[in-house]
Image (tube, rainbow, N blue to C red; front, side, top):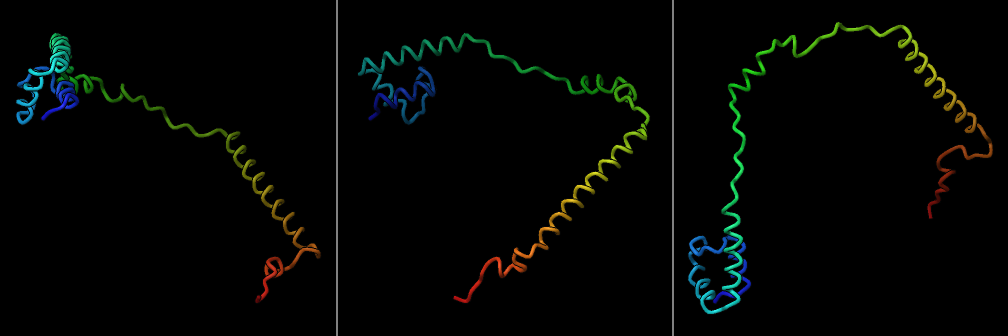
Length: 138
């Protein structure tokens, strides 16, 4: 026996035309529509929606002729499509700016390392990792 919920699902999925419904449920759905006014109302609403959908003209996908497209692309010479510039050498100012930046980074790293070594020579700080962790057998 088919319920109104399943009948509503059939209408949503397949529309109001009974020939579109699954064959194993078609007889039960038609019997439900014959005996229940609510099912007939749902079927009438679905038929109205089907009518609107049938009047809409489907959009055709654009047809692309591959040979014509290839002909248009290859019609122009490759030299016109890609304009190659002669390779430019960087100016001397850019080179020295890079060298100065590298030297400054090296100096900052060196100074940071030296200041860390100075702090390690402090006598109040423990000298080994074992003293830092204060490891004992128990």
